Image (cartoon, rainbow, N blue to C red; front, top):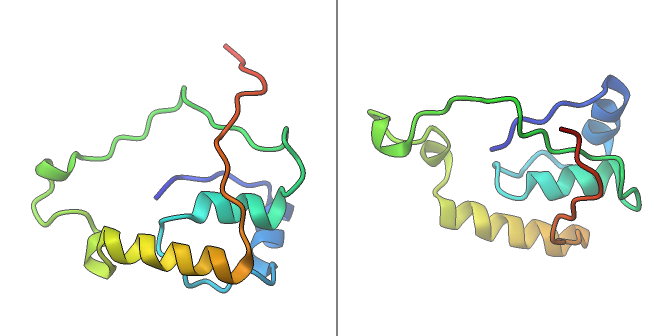
Length: 101
């Protein structure tokens, strides 16, 4: 799961969007954000690499990844594919339009 940061109005738009039914478990949510609040806006999303979030590696975790307690990777991928088809969500290769250093 990623760690999104939203403006309050865009978070509200995402949470209330007709295609966000709340059923996705991690996998594919990045594309769902774009589908719900940024479709057609190539320059409205940013990936910030200069902020570090420390997550223990899987082998460092005593009980494994928390998300796997809910559903394993194969189940989450399958769920995403069904969700993607149901709501006709486009998947695309990310493009760097600008970099700030």
